[in-house]
Image (cartoon, rainbow, N blue to C red; front, side, top):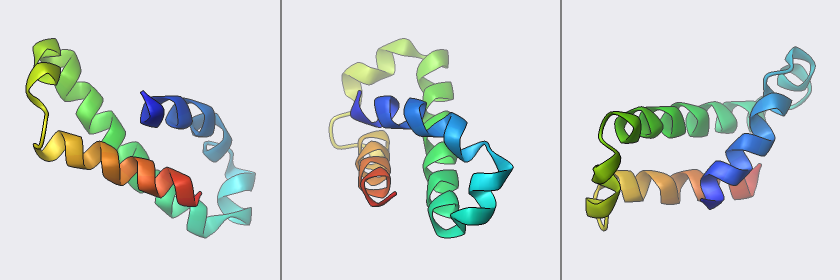
Length: 73
């Protein structure tokens, strides 16, 4: 939920070309988060019950990665 909340807030900001130019390092970090977040959301969309089995798996690690990256942006 935390990742989604921050992603939802930052996505329209980092979609701006002006922000991409002014904050290139943060933009690259957000691109990594965006790619990971969207891929995981596609997987969850295809199989909503996968969430029940994510403890300790790659998706859980991906969301921890995204949260850490979002904290640095």
